Length: 368
Image (cartoon, rainbow, N blue to C red; front, side, top):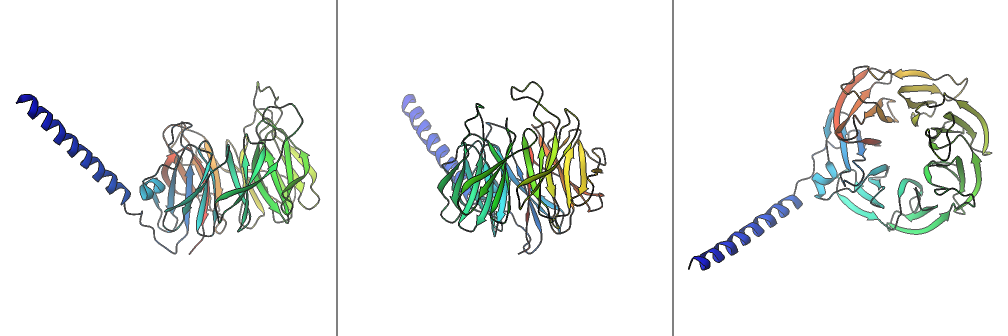
């Protein structure tokens, strides 16, 4: 009898546990979306998470009400975003989030935060650039090609080969992209020193420009100039190291006009530009800015200790295309949740809020 009751108890307990688990899952799937005030400006902060931890996330900041909502993708969809969210671009009402180590692009509705689909078949995607509503390019760290995708069908439709005969194991690892007329300029960052020029009509490489080692970020100003920031590599690298620099390229002729050097070992990153295209910003320990037109004279715009709560260094940078307010992310120790600091166009700290782990990308949502 005792054995009978024990078996019966285990069966009942197991069923209750199973039902309880199912109820929790159902409850999670029916989780209500994060309430967001419609009609106001908003900012998405894409947080990389930790490599191999599958803990990438997206935070949303209501600019008008100074309110932050964290982990909105999971809270809305009960789905993990993936492993290492590298970058994101907003196109119409959709956010295309490039999840590097998961080899995919997650598509999210920017109004509801709902999952809309994903683009797969990618190796190690880094950034996405839209040519038009039916075609976009995706850069890749290892594929030695740019993927051509159709955002409507969410499928890979082709490849643009960037292979080289040079004997470097990771050439050409494509990174950020900007477009001028029908030309797309692409940086080749990891153990490389090239900016590739792509014909967006022919989907083919038509030129290759040699710049300072490891070009990472780039922007196009209102005067038709491409600015490329290179970190110069790291000490002890088999590819070598040189002083980092900024290279200015004429976008129409694809000719290098000038290169501005910094000191060997300086850590430069996150080149970005304001909405009017006349002022550039970058991180060099602190946040610097300079005018796109005239003599190159960078000035400190935001000091690292100007009201910051955190002890780490600046990690990401974004400029509101409408107000020119500046947002700076601090990844702290790359393990705990990061902080974001909001500054006025004049450099005055006006808000501070905590987001996910390793905040790396800012995407501004247009008004509805």
